[in-house]
Image (cartoon, rainbow, N blue to C red; front, side, top):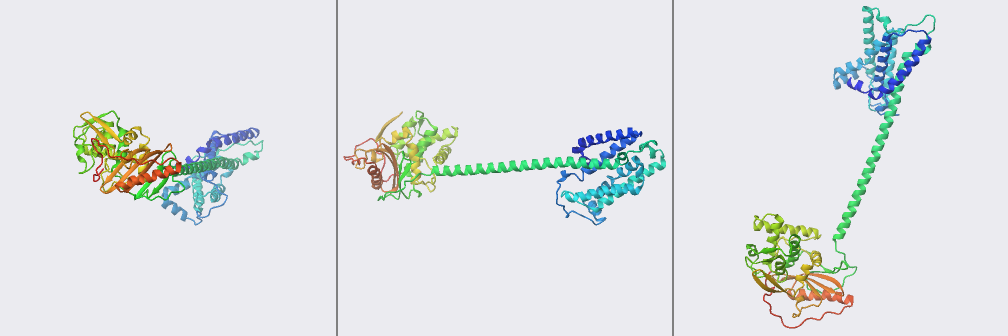
Length: 549
């Protein structure tokens, strides 16, 4: 019954306005017909109007999703079966509730209208109303049409009429308390004679009119919601398409652009790549995406990582971490306790390819990354290697993994020629790295040691047969018999870098010259002359032929 009364709320205002207009016109006719209206008639008629409004609002309003096409699947025309199904589904109280809806009608109608003091007339009126409701519900998909509802309506009406008769039997005045007193000198106006029927029709029209308005608002809101949802889905689809386009663009941006045509060059290297920094273009490649060992060219990424967390003028001291290098690896002859600036240690790492300097820098920067001076050396080195991986991702390296700061070979350490080009491109934007990597010798003024290093890159040594005029760096690498070289040069006012991997000691320099000479012939610049002369002696030579860089 709570749903029964709750359904009338949206219709109360409209029903009240219609009822007051109806009663104002009725009172005008009462006045002209010299009729007397008891207060109980007015109160009872108000209650009757409210009851019909509630009955219609809960059963025949278009707000229950009216459909022009009738729906028969929910129709049940078998007597008694519907009551049983209703009792099983909602309990016996639901059956009593369906009948109770009509008890007030069976009582109020004969109480207010003398001409309806006939049980057949009352049953016909209420039964007809119930039958109309059931037929109307054929067009309401949300409602079930049951013949038993008509039977329950007749039952409730009869109970209400019986209660009225019982009242009149024991209280005779009840027969006249609610009826309008007509004048014997005036005829009763026709609208007054059928005011009950008019009231029923008015309440029905009010519910249908207001229900239509509610349904139209619901449909409009639903349409707007669908349009909004469609707009949101379209916007989401567009955003997804834009995000996908941006992702594709970013993926494309990560890729190095390749020249339309490649020269046929004879290189000893197993993997190589020649790149124009200023044109942002690969000019030549050979197996440039194959996995190779980076060896000491790893130190270029180490230098970039150190400079991301440390300042050049910071003072640091080499500790026990320098003993982590492999036996036979190239060193900068550091000792535990050697101290100096970060720049000095960078020079010791990049010029003679000092693995000990690489570990000293990694340990120093690792503590800064952790923000914990009490951490172990292993934790600091691990943090630094992790930072190398993060920087590799920032540089868009596609197929590389670095496990040590010095490039000492391990099973899970690898790179490609193209990825080394990406690292070299970042290094060539750093003035400090280019100044150190481009020097043929470097004097390292430690706090407790003064040493001059000779660059392991023979392209930079004027006294060597492999000297190449215009060479500006960058880094050699060596692991047993497998050599590599990341070489940079300035030719014809433009910068170039070549990554030469899986080569021999002589072959890496010969291949570098071949690549740069190709650029020279393409730009019209004069080919550089090979340097000659004997090796100049220095305090410390960088690279042993058998040493691991």
